[in-house]
Amino acid sequence: MKNNWLLALPLSLALVTSMSPTVASAHAAKITQEKGALCISPKMVQLKTDMQKVWIDHTIWTRSYIVSAISNRPDQQDVLNRLLRNQQDIGNVIKPYYGEAAGNKLADLLREHILIAGKIVAAAKAGNQAEVKKLEADWHRNADDIAKFLSAANPNWQFKELQDMLYTHLQLITEIVLNCLKGDWKADIAATDKNEIHMIHLADILTEGIVKQFPDKF
Image (cartoon, rainbow, N blue to C red; front, top):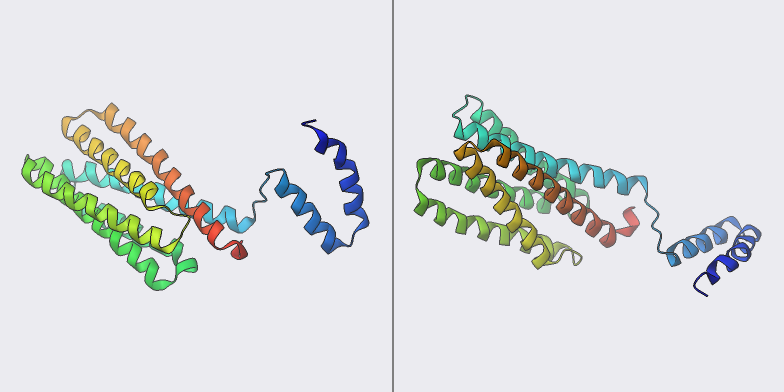
């Protein structure tokens, strides 16, 4: 009984071939949806690729800046500039759907996220734990602001889910900072790998939310 749809499939296909192209296409789409399949368009693939790239870049350049700052490398400012540019790149990805102002607002919130992180690295390096604690509170407040902004823009982006994702991201960055300070490079690499996978997951959540909110664009 569970496979009755298999018996009906030849009849469905026969009906589709006897219909006009437009009606047949709609009927085939309905059959596909009933089976739980999803047709992925080139535009969906492009958005997914673009979204994953900017968040992977976020992971890579954040870790690169941490290493550079802790090691007093001469490329520290150049790496920071590249990292800050990444925040605008993320904002730019959402502009086709939410507009110029919204994209720039997200970029501003993410730049604040990075600037606070830079202060945390400096305070941790100096051993100023009181300042680190204060800055971490600001960091989580900024994460709340990002989650609020995004969840207000798209009903498919739930505040609590985004907040949890961002808090985990902050925890993984903290692990990277502490491991770099200790010189525990294996642990640093492991945390960086976890962070990259985590941010790809976040990117996919954002992509899926946009596709659901703006189906006509895909």
